[in-house]
Image (cartoon, rainbow, N blue to C red; front, side, top):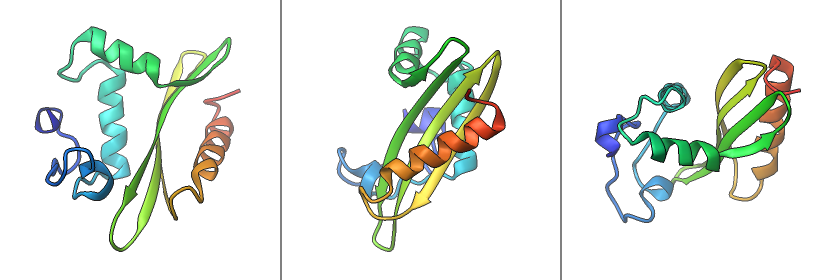
Length: 128
């Protein structure tokens, strides 16, 4: 499936439960945004039902005129660690797709990723 959806460098070598955390799987922020745009548009090779379930599971904030769908992530590499916060916000009919990537130590900047991303989305008009 990783090859069918064209996700990042498609390298899932290593333990099945750790390849995205400690393995060689890598994706740039631009690639992540492109992937999320395809997901948001229903253009991935998964059933409509499956994509709908995942879209619903990603909702982290909802208001009368906005919805924020997002997911955190973490990568532990030998030379550095970095956290992700990716997703999209819809507000009054417009959509903003984002991929926040921040260097740091596990647990150290978890809340900062969310706070900074929300502030940027608010400034851009994506959140009230």
